[in-house]
Length: 210
Image 1 (cartoon, helix red, strand yellow):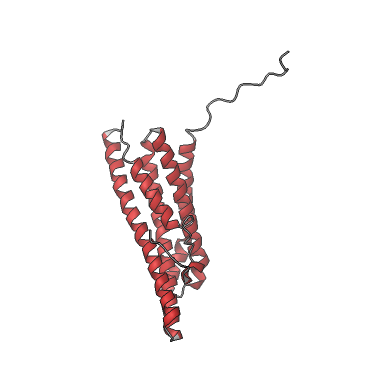
Image 2: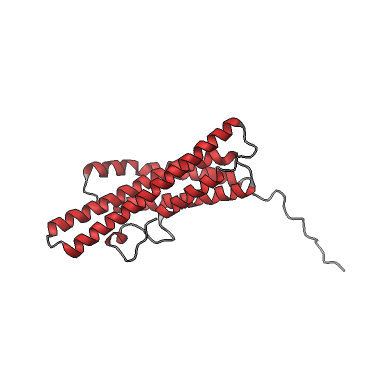
């Protein structure tokens, strides 16, 4: 993930804090899924092959999230340079508009990456080792958080998009977030259903011991 040493103009439109950076969360989630997919003990041949493919896809999505994070940082630098050094207000406005548009597009692409990561998480439900299940659950929650943040980034900044084609594309995909959220809920429910307490606590004695 790219490191920022100062506040950028783009930070007022895109959440880039280290803890809540959705790009970093997706990078982490993809790394977690890749680790889970290395645990293939007891799998059938078909499950083994599917999990191996999921590991490769998780690594690809990790690289994609890192590239998108670097794109956002680059857009921010271009906007900052235009604000600091270009005396032409028209040029400045063009650069800043392009930077914002690029960041919003990157956020939309991250939501799509989250949807794909959650699909990979479903394929990894065949892995039964407790430590791997806990890692898988953490990855799902990280992905859910990243998807929510990236979706809100698109939603909040949509009125500022001046590219008509991109606006229509983003507006048309907003409702699809519900499908991504439903997938996250489905995988999380499948994982949590296995860690619920199987038995209630023993009934308490009605009267104190004498």
